[in-house]
Image 1 (cartoon, rainbow, N blue to C red):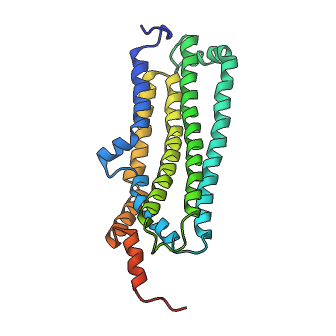
Image 2: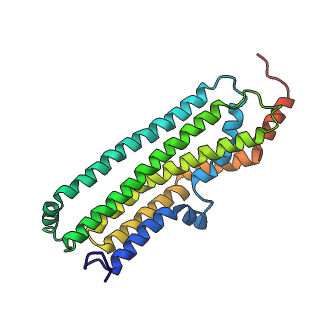
Length: 255
């Protein structure tokens, strides 16, 4: 049916793969259709407050600890994902033996050796995309550290204050966005494993995984608390820079 593909590769497999990668890549768009978008996108204003506050601290150990924690988390996921990818690719060496063993399970569709190898390739592709996301997020975070370290301690007289803060906020938000993309990939890797059972199982697993992710972003107590925090931050002041200037005009706190 499809040139250069196994003869038992059907439209059901095409539908399952299209739904899997479509749900993964279009997840932020789906969230915006059902709510206010991802929690990461809503936290942009919170990070704006954080960066604005960092400009008023001569020493930044607090900021260094936060960024160090994020860096360690991304580096851990990157190294762990590389090991997982190596494990998946190592199955190619004994794919025939694994295929014969798996075909003895009654709940798995009978497939050709070529299709079975292609399914392993799909799983390897999902894990590889996760690895690339983690390494790219780590690179973006390195840029973030440099930008944060270069911020002046006092920026009242800086003519490009807004541009510096906004630029740093964009790079940090993009780093976390890329990291979250890789994290979601682990969920869809589970859905891709279900492709070994049948295309229908993969479709059901993809829908289930997407529903779980959306529920966590929209309906959990954590999501509601973050949304309320963001709303409170917007009500307090829509512009962190204005907030800083207003605080400067007020009475200085006693030592």
